[in-house]
Amino acid sequence: MINNTNGTSCDACPLTCKNFEVVGSKNVRGMASNHISNFGGMYKNLRPPVLVIAGCSVFVALVLSIVLILQHLRSYTNPAEQKWIVAIISMVPIYATESIISLWYPRLSLACDILRNYYEAFALYSFGRYLIACLGGEGRVVELLEDESGEHLRKSLLDGLDENHGTEQRSFGNFFWRPCKLGKDLLTIEKFGLVQYMILKTVCALLAFILELFGVYGDGEFRWYYGYPYIAVVLSFSQMWALYCLVQFYNVTHERLKPIKPLSKFISFKAIVFATWWQGVGIVILCTYGVLPKEGKFQTGLQDFLICIEMAIAAVAHVFVFSAKPYHFLPASSAYGKVSKETIEAALEIDEGDKQKPALLKETTTQVEAPRTSITESVQDMVVEGGQRVVKDVVLTINQAIGPVEKGVTRIQQTLHHKTEVSSDNEQEESDIQVEKDVTENLTGKGNEIARV
Image 1 (cartoon, rainbow, N blue to C red):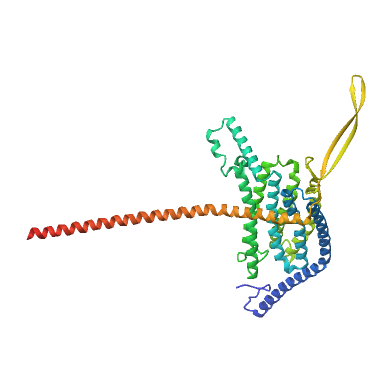
Image 2 (image 1 turned 120 degrees about the horizontal axis):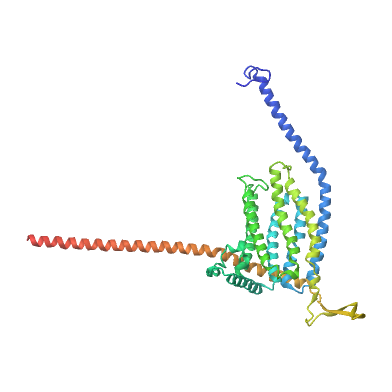
């Protein structure tokens, strides 16, 4: 029996206890409603300045990115590289546009988030293709990786390691510790890592849309009966694997990529991919544990606002990192284009014994200015050639994933077939033995009858 504060039992004053419970529940509900109303009022007050700041950031991002894209399309002198550069730069205006739309119309937040996540996977794939193009294409990359692998093998043999060491060159474990030993297999792993993320992103985006239609997606809800936590876990591991494959490929080839200053490009791109995804996951976790408010569309609104600000910063960085100036000029051996010469003179003094004689040093640089290209033709090349390359890599990745499964199924079928043949042979042998026994018994019985007669 529980006593109240006056020392009397609840049985003695049931009305008082019931009134206490009703008043307590009303107070809790009142506090919750006051908290929600306070949050709603604060959200309404902050919404106008947030939209203004986000809108200005998006405007800066769009202007800088569109101007940079047009510069590449007008100086489309290296399609193998520039088609992927444009795809990477387009990440900024696409992210910025989707974020401001989601911030302005929260009902479209899920659709915008799905499209944004899909393009993130494609941009990651495009960055990998850009590095391959800068190295001279897949054929040249295979040669470089094989040369690197052979050099490490020769060093190992010269150091007096085990003779069987060469047979372990292509083991998958070397991908984590010494990727330079894998040779051309490193390129295969890198492509598979990037394409699998693009495929999983597409499948998960479609799955999220279907689950949302049935009301079981639960965006930002870490509960077992929602689909969001499972999709988030799968995509997190897939993205980490794709980024790790890209990092390993960069570690092996970064010396060859020095002319394009790859570190700044890699950091600027990886910051966008890594920050936007894990930033959203971090906001969801903070809201789940009550560090940030969980009411309404606060989670997606905060994510969209931060992305708008970050895309303006990324657009400024892209102007310097992915500049179109290197593509304004062609090699001096080119047969077309406007040729310009730049001469730099510097006065020097040469010591000859005790005397100094003036001298003039001249350095002449010849540049061939590339003719302007048609934006329509540039876009057509990007869509057609780039689309064909994406389809080829996707088909190759699917075949690589299905290959081991087919081998496993074939082995299982062969095993079952072998067991079936063995069992049928055993049954045939047993039936033959049984027939022989029956014939023997019949002959024996007839012999006995004849003997009796």
